[in-house]
Image 1 (cartoon, each protein chain N blue to C red):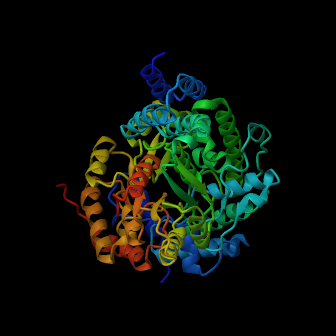
Image 2: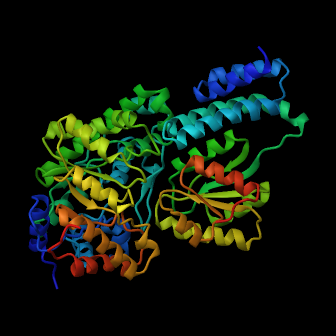
Image 3: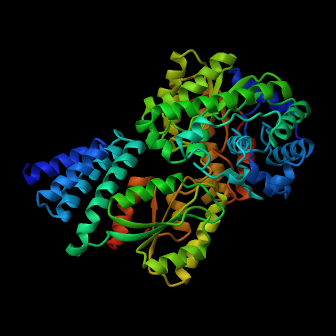
Amino acid sequence: MAAEGLLDRLRQLVLELDQAGVEATTREALAAGLSPQDIISKGLAAGMELVGQGYEEGELFVPELMLSARATLAALDILRPHLAGEGLGPSGKVVLGTVQGDIHDIGKNIVGIVLESDGFEVHDLGGDVAPQEFVDKAREVGADVVGLSALISLAVSKMAETVAVLRQSGIPAKVIVGGAALTPKTAETIGADAYGRDAWEALRRVRRLVRGELRT
Amino acid sequence: MKHDWKASAERVAATFLGQTPDRVPVTFIASEDIAARISGLSIREMLTSSKKLAEVSIGVCEVLGGDSVSVVVTPYCGPYEGLAFAKANGREDLFVWKDYTTPFIREGALCSTEADVERLEIPDHSKLEPWPTILEAMAIVQETTGLGGGFAPSLTWSSIQMLRGSRAYMDVIENPELLLALCEKIYASQWDYYQAYCRAVGRPAFAFNCQYAFNRTMLRFEDAWKFEGQFINRFCRETGLPLGIHNCGFDPYWVELIEKHRSEGVQVIAVNGSHPLDLDEWVRFREKFPEIVILGASLFVNGELENGTPADVEARVRENIAKLAPYGRFIVTPVCCMPWRVSLSNIFAVRDAVERHGRGPFPRS
């Protein structure tokens, strides 16, 4: 099959949440000589964009977002050994976690898988994460972005403290916050660089943060 | 001065009956956070005895000055349902207690595999603490104040998320039978809770359920009905109870949900939500459903209450009353639980604003 046909099919399979098909077509595309860069940008990422568009338009929902992201991640695993020689690194490095005092991690998990599927290197610290843990991990991996999640309101104060500790530590990473306890106004008040209402918005904002385009 | 619960009861009853109360009622969702702030007790201290829990609950509601009273645990009791499941399955270690805010089970840990779902044991609410304490406190509160009457099951998405975590979203498409099996177990557990409630407190007047799945940012309507709506609908049909719906999500399917429940034989008597934030949307809702009580409406705890001044809060309450009180069947209620970040002065501003602006007549604009 011609290159464009394979990439078309890949986009469609991502949209159809067909993980086995995405994996098989990724292998086929590699065997056909397509570059990993093209497979990612013109196939997988373009497919995820279609899913995101459907999500924003209210035609697709969180299950589709997660399954398409998982299919894309599986394809990225296949491509990873071929990426080293192409000088392709991750889209950026993101440290994620639910702040100390809160153990809810569903929203954070959804954001994590969507970010990974977009090529971000995600370091998920889990739930109930102390401010210094974010600092240490961000420093260790050279994070571009730190993502903080909170569902319960009590944790928002700890989130504010985490943002302050990150700033004081001199970590250059941008900070994005989200979760049911947050609003854009609260995000601004506690000094975050961005707010993500849902997983897809978080992805769009993280992309812009990494490109230096966004400041709350 | 002691709160006049009789006057509150009459006010709320008149509102539900479509009559004109002496003033617009106001209610607060009093959960663990606000109770800890006001009482100074940790959650576990409150739960040490039914008498103490009842005393704290009544005291907190008196301080807030609302026209309702409830036991100060998260209204739908989802967190303690998580604890009950954890205990029934020998995994109490998964439950994380907090001293001054709602405790929760670690999401997705109890039912991380299909085998976990299959062997999940149903808790006995009459034996597993803190349920006996909570149920007895509910009975004391009802007897002391003469108020009560709502039963709030945890059907089902809140429980699904606690037990299955983010996998549940993928199950919707990949493994719907597993998710339905989990829903049935949750239903069985809630039926046990209902029976324990009836024995301890008496038959409730209505069911009050969180319909969290019904948000446009989460699930398509059909899936939300399949994994959540149909279960509370079945519960209401089996018990003969009318339904009040809570949804504090950003984009609820209010109209579709009410119409679906009606078409499936269940009467919806009240809605409790913060969104849409546009009050005119609520006026349109009121015109479409004149017989449904609105507990809300556009008084978001993370809006003016969190970020504004008492004057901002008063203005927002006044606007709510001006737009919705003329149609009746309206109760001012900040939605949802009162976060720690909301100042007590802003909370009291709600009560004071209702007292100041909540007495009719209310001309329709």
